[in-house]
Image (cartoon, rainbow, N blue to C red):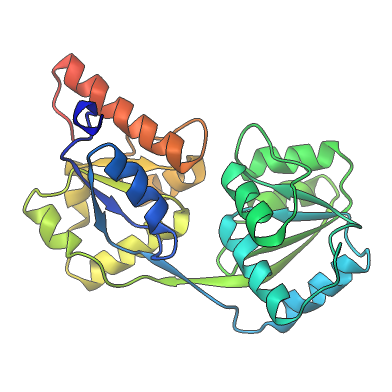
Length: 271
């Protein structure tokens, strides 16, 4: 089956953290592509654990009507926090739980044993904010990264919703993997995949530190999991070729496959 895929034999850079890279690697290998590891982000605990622990205690006591997760990383961080300081069974029972997309919903079920009450059809923070407002959200807790984008909170606050964003984890610069700057210079990379704005920003930092030429990325296909990530890439001067309507890794790889199939069928040259 992989020999029939237009991705067969292509070398695709995976910029995800080492803990999250295997899922994308698997999807690429299923289609005969060769994943190239280049971790641009890694996940670290918050510098201060107390604010998250206190917010979770207030959640359990009924201090929030919604608990909102915008990434699987946030779910993992809360799971780690509750493992260190266990909360009683049913600690989310006094609040409803919302997630930005199906990947986050899966992490929520597996790691916390909680089923999401809300997952918008459009897997974007803005769509989630509008649906929370429509459902009458009043006091929302959002565990997030230290460098999280502010769109969700801004849209909710503009509608009069009280939002408490608490740092649950830190995104730090990734390291290790292949010498991607050298491979790009040698024309040995076909595509680069970004699954978060942080990955874009941190790749730029890694490139600068490793004497890479950012313009070399114009010679490859750039695929982004969603519009926020695509916007971050475009702000960095990149041309974004693939953004799936469904903001999941399987959809991202399917659309990457479609991109190459369309170009091959049309006889055009791929980036």
